[in-house]
Length: 223
Image (cartoon, rainbow, N blue to C red; front, side, top):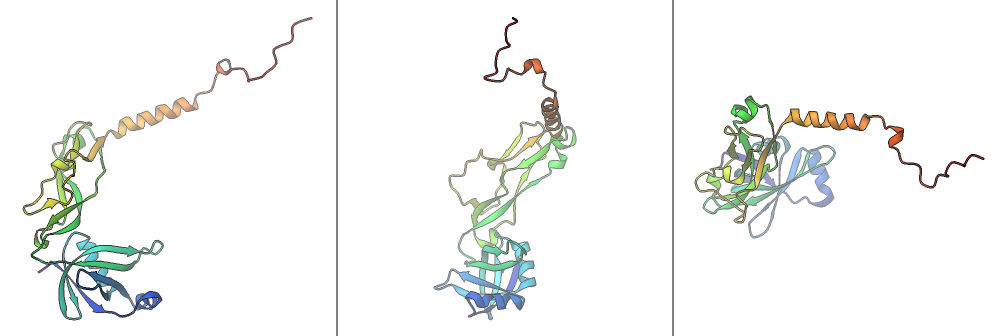
């Protein structure tokens, strides 16, 4: 059984009529993976809570009109203005078969590193999530990288620093282990550089350093 559960209703409403469905506090959804896609809907608040914790990486026990189905979230459509959920796509899965899921990459223990404590460096994370493959019960909620050993501004965290749990592998077999996940920079040095550039740009220009205007007439010779 999955940690997260959600009850759905079968629906027949489609197209423009979905607007009325949403006004009633329901979110339309589609479940793929069977012989045919199944149309469903679920209560807005309950769905939002489950999606917040399950994300795209944790299996969800769906109860569709009394029928159980294990699934993961494949896509969520969000209104660009209201930021409300408009539609959800689920992928039906089997507990016995490996599936691919998008999993957050989380940097831990950076505050305990010399880079943070002693030198006050800051971190830029360039990879926020990765796709992994595992059986539903083995899918991790997140992929952790320990940054406690970072000390120099040149230090970097790469794919090879991610310790995958047992039964989990990267979905991309050609993923470069040396691809950078996070790097450091010195905020103080960056600030000094910006100040120097701004000061240089603000310096007054000496008229003697300005070339004569192109095409200007030479001074007339004295009579």
